[in-house]
Every structure is written in C-alpha cells, then in structure tokens.
Length: 113
Length: 111
Image 1 (cartoon, rainbow over the protein chains, first blue to last red):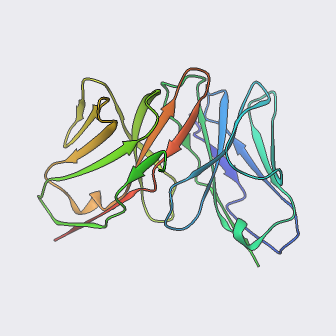
Image 2 (image 1 turned 120 degrees about the vertical axis):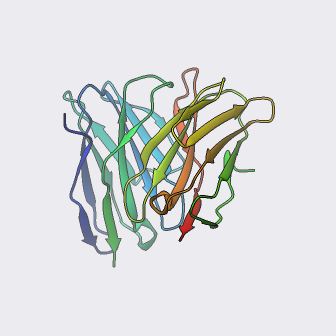
C-alpha cells in the first residue's frame, strides 16, 4: 500500500520563475492538503482540495494555486517565485473527515536563488 | 495570539526521564487533535490521536483539556530515539476543516 508520494524531491529555481509540485495521495484517501514549512517552523497550511475543488485556503497569495485530478492526485503551482518561497513543501492526504489524521509525503525541498 | 502555540524548547533530558509537552489552542470549536513527530529534514509522522478521555500508546500518553484548551503529551522512560520535534495539530470541524500546526517542541534525549 503506497503512502503519499511527492515529486520532485528537490528543486532549484531562480526568482521570477514558476514551479509545479506533484502529489499522489495514499490509497483510499480523497483529500489533499498542501503545506509550506520554513526552517524551524511548523507546517503552514496553504490550501486543501477535495472533489477537485479548493475547499479551504490559508493565508497565502494568489501566486500559489493548485489543482486536483479525478484520481485524487494534486499539483501545487507557484508563480513569480520569491526568495522567501524557499521551503519544504509538504503534501498530506486524508479521508474527508475532521476526525481523520493526515499522512504526509516526504516533501519537496524548493530553493530559490 | 497564535491559533496553536507550543514551547519550542529544546527540552534536554537524560535517557529514562519522563518529559511532558503542552500545546494550547485558541479556537474553542476545535474538534480533533493529534501529535506528530518530525525528525530533522523529514516529513511529519503521526504519533497519536488525542481523545477526550485521554489515551495511551506504550510509553506515550496524550491528554485533552477542553476547558483550558490545551493538549499534552507525556513520554515516559525516554529513549535516545525519541529525540525529534513534536508537533501538535488542531482541526477545526463543522465544515471548516483546516489542520493547524504548532511550530513544534524540540526534544533532545542524551545518554
């Protein structure tokens, strides 16, 4: 039973570029959430997708957008990259219930030069 | 005030010690609670859910105090391998499902 998988593992971009990160949820999960984790901080909620729609959004600018596909996989897109976007980006999946814990992927480490 | 607050530590304890962490939350509508463990440069991994009646899993005990709006994690007989960052997570239910993480508490267990 595959867990949450993310790609790529590492990525280096320059300011102003655009990036797409990918996530496949754990088998049986239908909800995908994306988080940004800066060094020394807890994960910060970006947004959550369920039934191919963005259901909840954290305090992130419109440069951060996403998509969920019919097979529940998801993408996170970030436009006009800034140095401050350098972080670990985590994808988590769960079943659609506030009682269910989330399972995380290994993350994508994004560095902006 | 932050929605979920944790003392960042680090907590430095010897092997075999008992250590406890607290996590306070501000939204009284919060419905579910979890503790995650995160090793350096790794993803968070679920340690345990926190139930209203309190729950235990081996050396780990989690408790919820709704009146004072905090959850706690107690680790007994600490092992070197317990060294990690412990993150508390609070979910707000009722249609607003946003898992909110604390910044984590760092634990260092030394010989």
